[in-house]
Length: 286
Length: 281
Image: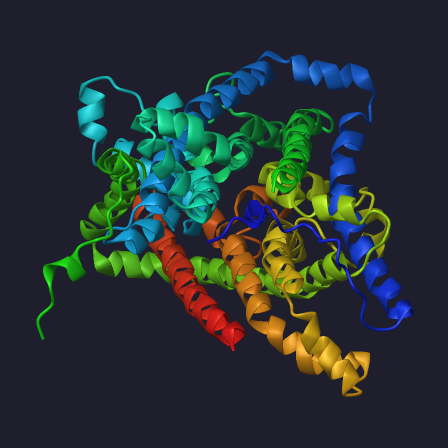
């Protein structure tokens, strides 16, 4: 499956030409804008409106709650472990896939995309079947007092699984389109393999790499289904920000779930701004 | 027929690091993705097929598949329609705020699904901004099947728009101009020239948004109410059964979900192959 935001160059070109009479244009534009206003803008505004409905006092109180603070720490920690790992994988995989020809490449690409076609809930279930008490490794882990499920390691593994191909999918098309000429020139001039990678390949794909990392991070911090299944929901210990939102929502608290949700909504806004900036950068450098 | 060994040899590639990067890729993929999937396969083989089949096809599970498939289909249809409209407007018509609207399209993709469910449920509830006008009219957009469709439409929208948008950008204006020179009206130009060219891409966008909707869980937890037989989707049933330590039941529904998505993936690949051939002509 394709990530939608993958189309880094999918913004409108300047050559927008018209077809059809102007009133039809304006009708179509009006429908598109109205649909987006109701479906995209209202939900975003509503998060902040509900969070601040009782003023700043309850808002700050909800954010300063120790369980919320611990959820922030856990969310950042999980992303800080899983995103770099998937980024290193993305760079390695795109180097092998984009710069070399080998047998089985198509199969490798399909296998890398598997996590996109598996429901996050099923992804969580996979780890329960592997590490749970009745799982394949459950007995062994219990005997050696290793806690993976309902603890940080399980949540990191589930997050890595659902965000697995993000960076690789951004880098492969970019590296492929750049070919091997530049690297071959650097090697001919006597540069070592590492030096070539650091000074030739990496700078030319840096915006694409950064973009993939931004997308991967947004998904890692916002993941719900997979993490919900493996977390165990221990308040102050294994609740990430999205799980904390659910818990507060189930307690019928009118303000707190929205207060915590504003943090995730701000993450989404920052992600979109960075995407726009990176698109502008890549177009500028072309 | 004999071939010289030189013809079989690959072209010389001086770049280093092939075994290192490919080795790491294969090992990381195996540990992080293939081993967990293998765990499901191994576990499944150890279960009784009769029990699996019964749990996969009991009344509650069938009701969940019906809602999952029906609501995902409805959401994907809405997205095919409005996604095409949005993509068309964004590419073809210059208007103030177009760049902003273009950036907004990715919002459902960037927003954590839990937040999407939370805010949509609130918007459509009795006292929400939209619900206070819609509920008196009998339109219940929260804690209902309609709510499931609303949430699935929200999460699938960027998949549809971003698939169709590049295709409209690369649409050859010469075709439409030719039709215009031949005297075709704008409507006829659209129906006879533009729409057929875009059809395979719109179908791909439809499929991607359908696939995204089938697996969705985060937003649905908040907006659907999760009532068995009424507003429970298949992923929710997996979680419910896991919470009751009914592993066989959870696995059975998970397998059905995986069969659905792989069948869809296969269809999509065929469709994309067809689209590529179609557009070459």
